[in-house]
Image (tube, rainbow, N blue to C red; front, top):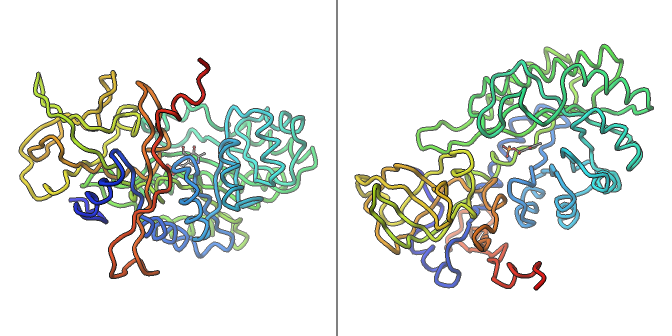
Length: 417
Ligand SMILES: Cc1ncc(COP(=O)(O)O)c(C=O)c1O
């Protein structure tokens, strides 16, 4: 059974003032997770985690990860502006985009962000658009690794990054152009729970970096291992063993680089906030036709992952946690799309209209992927904070609104009648 950091009474009190659907993020969990990641890499002097803004682009969340020592991974101009607004700048930012417009390179360069290029042609494009930076990074997509999953796809089908041959050529060209400071980046997996798979990817990346260094006589200041660490979406999934991963990377790095190990960077999003987000929704109707359907007031417009790539999200019916799960339901939203389903053939307790459900592990790539199809409005976000610095305070939790719900006026704001 998945546990919750709040009670049914606390949720009822919150939704008395703020209608469902809404998102809640657990601050203590996000802080804990950020620290676990940096502790696993504390052996590496320059280790830096850049939180992937796309996972949860809310300034209050970015401030929390910043307080825990994170930089940011930005992929667009609005994300760079968000970084500015929370006081994160310069090399604390990696700008990792693809199919990038010139003006975004200009803005990234202006801010002194580490620029990660996805295409060898972008070296000239960047030079023309913004001038060359002091330090440059290129994104490698190795094909020797295992086939990707539905989220990231097969390496050979991936639109991101460059081949090994292109990588050697582009670092050579960058050196010829006078650049002397280098980074290397890869994002070879997504939502991966198997430590060995991630270690294989790290070995490939580190050995490629060493080969490039030796062949081209350049030095890498940093190697970015990407994000992609998985989280246990299903109750039977085992948590990713981050400590074993840190230890495994250390062994590989020492073997590959001896004592001259470059700074290692990561840009995890899901691992940091994913398990600490909860989508709260109310049951509107229970319908029986060829199957039994539970209709929620949340839709795929609030959480796209199940409809988009069949992702599993655990569902808890508040107050019925210990009831027998003898019913089988499709849990659906109200969009005019048949893939607007949060769960298919899910075993759940008997559900009635007005029941409250929690959709778990919605702290990353969840609200952020929301959209407005069928005139659905984006939901509010709340930060769950516990009294007392340790998060163990005697008073009840506080729910701080960190994004209000969209209104019909917001929806119409960009239309010209
Ligand atoms: C370049 C890059 N870095 C980091 C991330 C974050 O991935 P995750 O949240 O799975 O760690 C993504 C996700 O799409 C990405 O594209």
